[in-house]
Image (cartoon, rainbow, N blue to C red):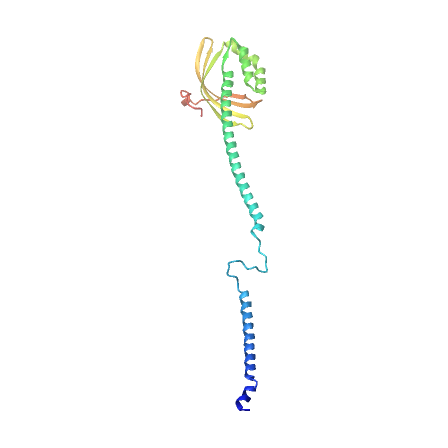
Length: 238
């Protein structure tokens, strides 16, 4: 046997070593691949989808009731504010209209009441008493009735008659809620008695009370007129 044949029959030990090395390399490569694969699995996804964490986050649906309640409260508040503003405006306008109406009523009642006390006809004295009672409160009407006997004698004896002409009537005070008012009137009274006559400037203060929906005279008096205003009765009462 030649040396070449002997060498051919010997096992190739280096091949085993080579295969073992190759297997080891392959095993190492597999380990590296597994490590890379695990590392890649730990990287955040690049698709833009959120990564779930251990703490649960409240969803939009879970927060919706809070938003809805807040929105409802805001809307209700706005509606209440608008409604209150409208009601206040209506009430304010209504109060102004009522006051204006009350002033007109007081002025008309004051003119009628003053006329009832200022105008008299000695030929019909009892009519003078009746017209005073008709425009007066019960208390003032009682005073008229109590003093009527003496007043009637004076009127008839002096043959006194009078007429009044108004220049202006102003409502000085008005409390529509309590039903009280004060009016000032400037006028000229033509007085006739014993075949004589005179035109006299007169200024009146009338206090009125509302009784059963009607303004009644509760008191009346003449106001002194300064000499400087005697010829200026047509101006508004001061």
